[in-house]
Image (cartoon, rainbow, N blue to C red):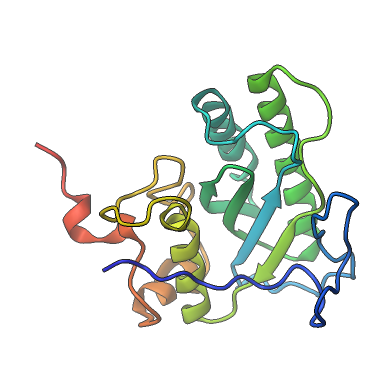
Length: 208
């Protein structure tokens, strides 16, 4: 069964053409004050690179990125559980204590990732186009859809018509063990669509 495309929240206001814009036409993340965050709610976050940054799925860049993500996402108050590396953006599913821990954790992660990308690409300068997008996930259904969207995101970027398979640029298993009920138990019990391909039992069996 092929997972269907899931909708992400708009990066601007509710009106057509609303939201912050750049001269190059790229819509930016709203700078409105972020709401308070509850530790029991996982977070779906997105970081988007500038147009002049090389593709993140290149082998040399990806290897550096994996190390940076692991180093930045294994903290007591900021835990990166799942990630997906796409050509010009990163999808992250994480747990964090509160709004302050989220902000500090994402800042540290962005710095590590930027250094890794520049080191691998032999470049200098800014890597990310704007601040991170983040959305709290408050129900098992929301978490299930978000995890599936992140892990199976490659299926919606040029993989049409192919047999569903895991993404070599995504975390097939949790990077760190989740602690929230929603991300450890609740999402697996939800019936909001199929599981990500990496969780299909037939595809988890070792290859002979």
